[in-house]
Amino acid sequence: MLANGLGADLRFAACSGATAADLLAEQLGALDAGTDLVTVTIGGNDIGWTEAVAACLTPLMDCTGRIEASETLMRGQLPGLLDGVYDAIADRAPRAEVLVLGYPRLFNARTTCGALHQPSVAEQTRMNAAADVLAGVLDAAAADHGFKYVDVRESFAGHAVCDDVPYLHGLRYPTAESFHPNALGHANGYYPAVAREV
Image 1 (cartoon, rainbow, N blue to C red):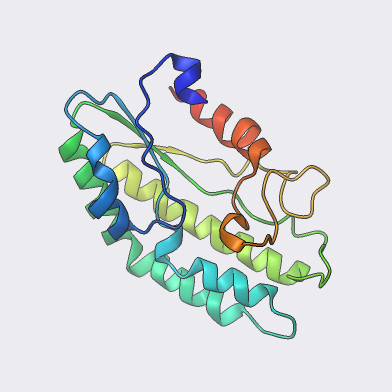
Image 2: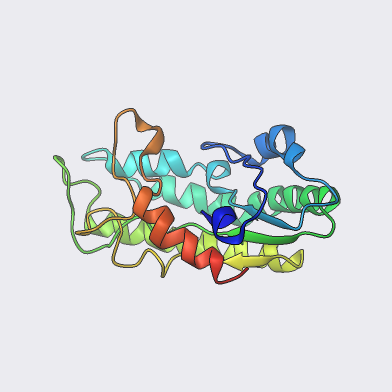
């Protein structure tokens, strides 16, 4: 969408489920000295977030420990991983403007939905707080490298899982798209947030 809006030559290297190591091993080939714009979203798969969300979706399971474990990785391990990724991007595309895209809060923390009404409102609130920690880590790492952080939390506000018009998939089968942006999330959430920065 952004490439179409700009009339830009797009090399699309995104991969759902990618970790920092995957990005370094498989996704940098699209970059070179002529690259003038890079958008990147990375980090969520390096912090055990999938396991935390899965725990919070499980009835009668206290997922607090999983969320806290993710936050520990956010604060401890993730900054170093981001440094490696951002250094590699800068090395491969030294003239590029780099936009680091953040993650939305997944839940509205007001209502439950789905057959099992999981996660609870309290669990949603706790996961959203962890999403805010992640945003802070991503913002700081981007700033350290002279990159621009694009915060999408407000772009998705009012359109979380369980809202009337969600910009995010809830639990889906197969599960690969679960808790990722849907078409509206890309069109009305990520796209305008990124376009404003270009």
